[in-house]
Length: 481
Image 1 (cartoon, rainbow, N blue to C red):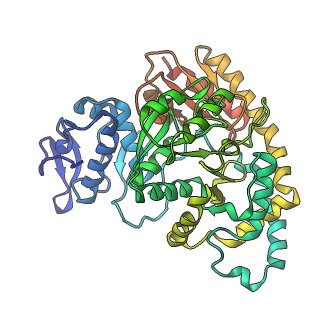
Image 2 (cartoon, rainbow, N blue to C red):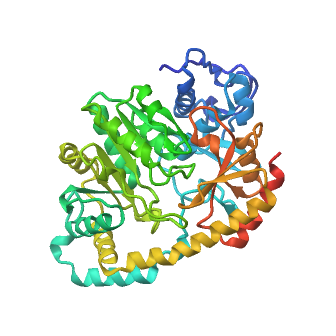
Image 3 (cartoon, rainbow, N blue to C red):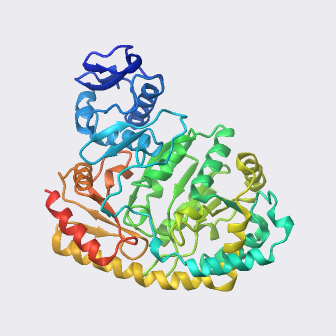
């Protein structure tokens, strides 16, 4: 959709060098007009309009954009639309928010940015963002030992560009690991090593787009990061509601989409495990038409405390399901090692696309991870961190029960976060913004929605010690009213 705005500003403005606007106030910010934009596309429209304004210089580096509440009022849209647009541009590195300083332009599209203090987002004192494991527990000694062994044994041929599918020794180790822990019966040749689930989603979005399929179902609520990755690569994400049994398959069928992304083992952000009945219905849905595709994001299935493991959905429909996983939640996001297992008809095309994207993943980390898997060091690491994560989860639950008794806490049996739904009428975005001002990072549930719904906070606990979790909740409670 074409972004509509006038070439001049009608509010108060302060001109910077070259006639650019360095600071603006007033009711006609960028002459933005959402008329004609469909409700589900408002955030994408606003993101594009602001990105264009930064690119052509109407918003200079250092310029402050309006507060989300102010701009939402001016445009006549929900505040969540503005918050999502700002967050997308923050993720792209174009905006940055500073405590007490509002949100400002930090770079222009395509510019090479130095990752110095001037361009980094402020680090909150208490970061309870979801999705981060206990990075202090990274198995440094075990990884160093495995790395030394690998370096002593690899030959010169192992140091070349490598196989775009991933080094054979890792694919062999993953086939065994996934068979034992996720119930998957796969050969090493069926596994494609990728740089995390994010790259897997990029490959799948491009594969779909090349076939003229630009619409995909997405859980509602669902992972903001996964949704934005798909949208960034041309996909329109159609919200499909999630309830206490997981994805609503009847609503999926009514949506008209022929591809859907799900997190069945531990739905993000609700923490719901897809029920056995819904699993059967989902498999029936994907088999009901020849072109349907189910994309299974198995993002943190290894972390479970109070429930038995559940097998991957791909076990039930291997020819219709793409399975995605990574070590971002078990070792560290910085590893950038994941895997994609697609139906046989897609595999070779995805391998070729992967080759042209970046040739292959780095070989030495792959071989080291393979050594960790085959030696048992990876599993020992998981046995170590599970009780640590559980102790932190328990501390968070105790603090929430004491300081936020009105919150309903969900998703406690597994994963690295909980969802605390709040009483109706509370603006969870405002709560999260106030919390950040107070040095506490949490996600508003509305960030992970495309539409409206009950308010809540998505709170990560794995990376924070029990005493600091209690302190964070104690300081968070007065902000919720």
